[in-house]
Image (tube, rainbow, N blue to C red; front, side, top):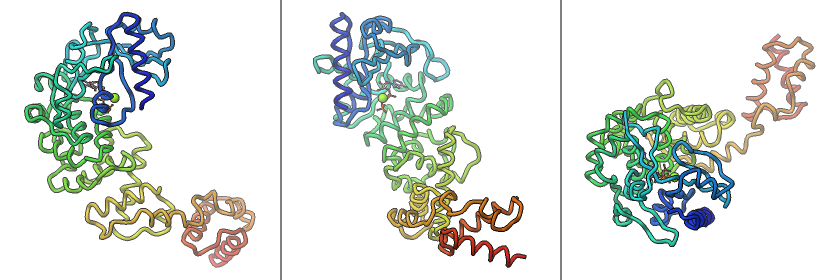
Length: 396
Ligand code: ATP
Ligand code: MG
């Protein structure tokens, strides 16, 4: 936001007054040149972290091992990172130790793509030694320097290229793309946690179809769990129609659906995400067979119902695309939204029947719940009492 930019420019100004070179770098610069809003604006400086901390009294050590200090005042907070290279790479992963450098060019040279290697100086002018601005203008994602070397250092960059292609609709420069095809297999060196971060951004981008196609073409999909099957040629059209999801978890749900309901949790989804994927898949299965009924609407969250219906349609299992408004009104029209909303409790049942508590209470509560949800029984104490006493009477 404008406030983030103000904060970052103020920090650059104060670092320069203290005699240190400082600029704004990274994603925010790229997004600004593309006319997109930036969420966080990062500062890079020749000053060492300790020097940054003496100039700004209010800081937090968020990434001190990588030379990053979060400056809290001025606000909103800005991450200030000392110019650095990334030392020696082993294992196709980012190194865990860094080396500080004094040259901004050196710092920009270690960055992944030309569009991410542009700096803005305190006076607003650009420092752009790798032609990032021109590449943005032409819609090109290009590795900084030799792509084979850069992907050899950190294999995640291959997936980041795809993620940026999905975000921007830009083309991956042919030499860069060819290097991804050559090195696709090395993606298995990268931790699933880092892969998940990038894939969440792919799902959110609204161009998952483009990403799926690029991953299939370059061979990245072959080397990542579930993706070879989910991104097969016959599925690409489905991803094309996936569009911009309301929640990123929809991407994982569609991946699971198209990969054939795999066991396990290869991308380390959180418990909330796993539950959400499960609910979407359940909804999709129901909607692939028949329209939703009130019990479905009662049991499953609205978002899962809507997404399940969308997927049933996308995969050709249900004729019409279901109108989300219809699903919402089915849900909103329910007489209760949970057991707590019932006009009675288990203790009422025990009192009315004169029987001792036991598993039967839960069973009856669930009978009553279903009768109320499906409209066969009114949710009042009198109606439920009558219905319940009739019921146990006839069972005797
Ligand atoms: P987003 O808008 O999604 O945050 P971003 O470009 O800011 O995109 P970050 O992951 O936040 O991406 O990284 C910030 C900057 O750090 C990038 O613009 C790039 O210059 C550099 N960078 C990040 N990850 C890598 C990497 N794996 N290899 C090289 N440079 C990287
Ligand atoms: Mg960022």
